Image 1 (cartoon, each protein chain N blue to C red):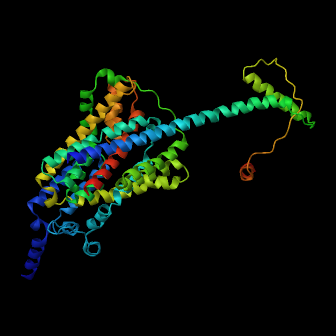
Image 2 (cartoon, rainbow over the protein chains, first blue to last red):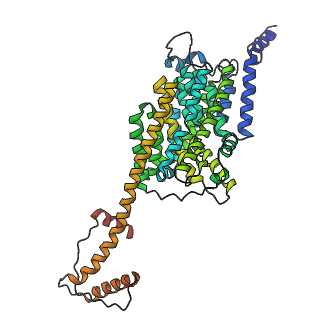
Length: 393
Length: 112
């Protein structure tokens, strides 16, 4: 009899018996996200760790992540007790420390800085404006989200999806609305993956065939000295203007300086390979961990996914419209298609500009021209994040 | 809410416009700087050509004079002046080596 009792106890305590329907639904959702990552190749580098983090966090009885350690709506001004988390937390709680304390997103930014050449932006600094125009999406959505009933801080975190920059969205969400982090990260990365689907119709709708045909003048060569001074100058200017943007912009520019200085190749290679890869794994799993059933299965998640799409579409629209304005002002020297690359999503958005441009005129190569607004968009969304954090946080 | 958005987007524009302006000015300075640098060596060459005949220094070294004459002649031809244009190197002056000791030592180490 004792044997049967023991088996019964084991079964009663197993996940099969204790699983709630919400957890089951979350497991199905995470498997769907894994499918999108593996089969459809939607940002697999991030979506797979995120989806697997979601899967693990919703395993009943595994206690890998404890939402109650991180937030408690009943207690005003709740601050996580890191000693408790280190002692009692699960592995996902430990990974999440790196996100909550704001370590991982700036490290990813360092890698982004080390991987990207800012040359096209230096050669054509006018394209900074396109990177700024595409940030309209963030602020429109910020207003829209508040009209739909989100608080100011939540709305700020949702709006930043329009920047189409994963690390920035995660950084901002952990500062302003950590309980929405899972939904915001999933929305941000899904839309980044969907750039080639969402952007082209908007771009084609807003431009004429003649505008899309514009072949832009070749960019001037940029000297090494300029490339070295650029990250230092941007850091000084942006951080002095918006100190809250310092973690993201500072690390982005440090990564770029490591690349351009040419004397620390070993560090530069580590930053753009091993470091960013390791951090991506931990960041992905940690973000996925926050998507527990009680956090994720809410009407808010659907609203966030909807608002994220709106943010993204408005960002693209304003980028292209500003591109058109520059087309008129320069009397047809600028192809408005590069405006859509102002939403960060490096280098996917620039590739979309190239592709749409080539559809109109097969001999047109817009890629390098679009990289200017593209990297300006990264700086722009980091600046926007800094502004939202200092205005609302 | 509206105010925050307006402030937000204005500051984004302000930041990126000032960056754009700073980089533009900097680029202009750099481009004219490199142009000047490019112009410099040409001038120096011309000055050298002129100074060869002007300088007077008693240092008889036929072989070296022959080499210098050939080099100047070659550069004149390259510059499009007819090879029939005759020149005579009357004298030359040795100038001190501008290379720092560290660099020349480094070069020697690489060569040996």
